[in-house]
Amino acid sequence: MKKFITFIIAVFITMFVCGCDEQKSYILFNKRPITADTITSESNINVFKPNERIYFLVTLPKPVEHKSLLIQVIKVGGDTDERLGYDLVWGKRIKLRDENVHYYTDYLVFNQTGAYIMKVYSRDYPTEILTTGNFYVRN
Image (cartoon, rainbow, N blue to C red; front, side, top):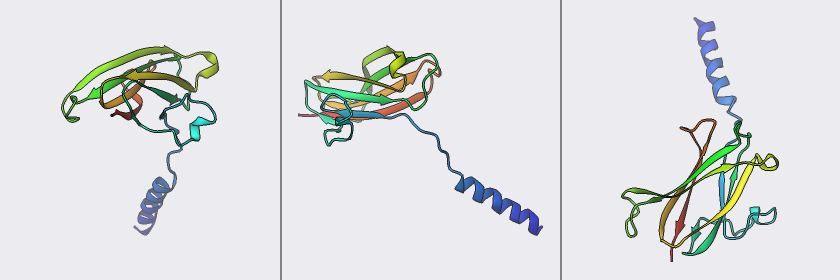
């Protein structure tokens, strides 16, 4: 019985000590074009003004097999209430080039204020979200 309890304790300790080392995808928003200098600057923010360029960077730690992404931007709620409903306001299929299979960068411009969610899917697993990011457009 004592060996069994020791075995169970060893299994639990192993499960808690051996953490997952899996890297995740991220979305980084910025007011300036994404470069090596601006990637760590204070301009990384998720609150923007209407008609302002919203630069974003999607990181991919592991290259996707089919080199194809789907990016969707969903507006949460109405103009005054950010709790009710969802509207798909922008979507784009992206074909990744060989030189940038670990990231994708682009920009968006929205003139309507509100809360937005950006979702990134891979063609490899189209029902699983690779990453999400929230940003806001406010006056």
